[in-house]
Image (tube, rainbow over all chains, first blue to last red; front, top):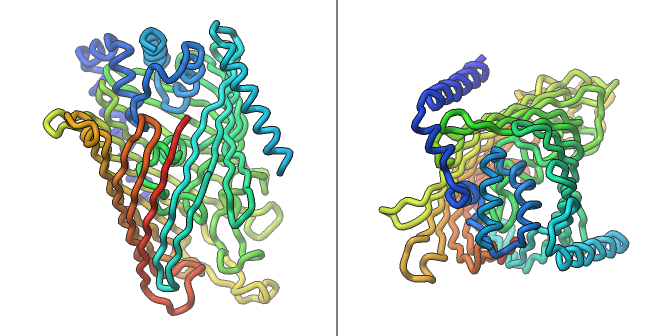
Length: 90
Length: 387
């Protein structure tokens, strides 16, 4: 019972946060306008240091992009922008 | 063993040949990545001291991408254990992108039960040289499984939600027939289905901020664990975890702060185990409330905005973790660990880690009877690289 209450409370908190966020138009706009460079700087660092764009070739970044989309749970828009940025500046 | 190693070398060379030829993009891409580490481990326990070079662990990751939607990925781990080369298949799975919100994976994959084992355990990513208590050998949380998974992520306003639901063969209950002192533990390294029942699990992660700096996650994993046809057939395990992450470069403190935490709880329904192996056919059975808990909280800081090059590559890290296993079981234990580390980042993917740990433990199936509380100290100096 205790566990059920805790899980329910956590689920409700996550849902409430989701509803709050979805109602915030400016946040949505900011997120949508993020460049590949910003997303690269903000997402890679969640687990490891920010990789050097020069570390891999254009083709390799495509492969790594698909691998990291899955591993880091990034959205398609986010990973596409990051890969394009890395391919541009490497 | 030798054949496997030769095969690996051949694959590695093939990868490099393809790498050298890939100046143009093609639909088929093959890549070898991975990581390795080596170092010195020092232990001081009530039984004595031990210091040994460890090493040259090598974990190649093979990525085979076909088109923009299909990928096969696999990781092997080569490590020397007591003078013998051990080879483990960490994961090997096929992955297909169904649409922008969903992908499917099949095979052996790292389980998104919390985040440590799926994302943070590689030596060049883990800020300390050891895993938190509760993970790894004799741990209470799963690392990988064989099965099928649907996963994805989607934006919700300025925030992001990610999700995963999966089914695997699941862990197996140790009934004490092989090691009586481990009766009631779960064997997470079992990948063969020992009953018809499949484990079901999932994780929901939520990143409330538009800069993705914060993430909350909730994971659940449940199924039957007893052998089919045995008295343990209906014994069920239910596991859940909560994880948290916050990583952000903060100007006033001139650097990056990284907070990670995870709480795991593993429960196994009531079962009766024989007192010992000799009495398996007798009526001397015992039971206990089979509930284990483990958690860790880690904080690291790197002055990445410092003007001095040496300083900006330094990182300090501290972690507290705790593991409590069931009272009344032969593997009852209460362990806590406090670790500190000083890391120097040679490049973004190469690090030298100096870690010191204090471990306080009581019980455990390896402990001598009446040993009471014990204190151990560890010192690890490791050099890790991701490639």
